[in-house]
Length: 274
Length: 107
Image (cartoon, each protein chain N blue to C red):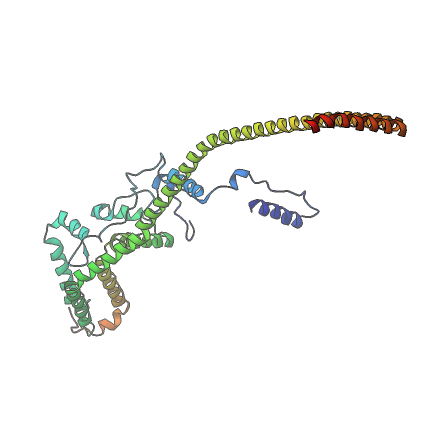
């Protein structure tokens, strides 16, 4: 995406400066393209740490700001405690109270603070606050604190726990993948062996095939010779027999039949008599 | 130092994260520790430009806010302080109206 942008910006830049400047194409290093969000966050974190907790950091005069757990200490509901401390060093414990009473008395006496129709509102307002904070203050504080804790847990603590859990899961998965990657070595050897076995078996099959083919060819040759010889023999015998049969004249045949019959007669007598 | 910019003295490498309630310039004696005789020279060392007035007020506000209002378990004190300050401010804004109701002529 970055490369597209780079190319595009180059195109737009050259379109703007057409005819005035040579075209420049931005070059983006490959490493910056494939950086995960987590890696970028970690980098930012380290950068911030370098700035905020470097060797020049003066934590003595400028301590790290921390959100206070409780509101600052006050007396009588709203007067800051450190005002009393300021008076305590100079006037003792009762000094600030005397100062307050004296101030209010002066203001009322000189009528800088005029007791007019609005004066009742002051009493009513602070009276209502005093009453409410005494009656419902504790319950309300408890309710609000619980709500606060709930929100804090839901929006701050739980996401951290979840993020850590998911990161642990990713780490475990990656380690498992690395472990499985180790197994690939054995798998590779097994596959190599398997391929060698297959090659061996194919080689033997081919050897058998060659043997069978050569044998069948030789058998064919043998059979051809056998058939030839048999045919020659049969032909020879047939030729001789034919020629011999042809050479016999009818006279010779009759003679031989006569001889045969005579012989048969000779032979039949002893049989009959016997 | 323009609007929405850090004060020129602020250096995150030394001061850490920015706290709007903190003064990052050269520290002087706090007002509470100044002796009356040295008050003149202390006041002469202050800056009275509108900009420093505004930034001083904002620092005071943020110090108050972080101490009383922006704590984790806030008490009712900031509410009373805010209401009291507003009441006081409006009382003096309409001071003439109130002084018209004075009961005595001479005090």
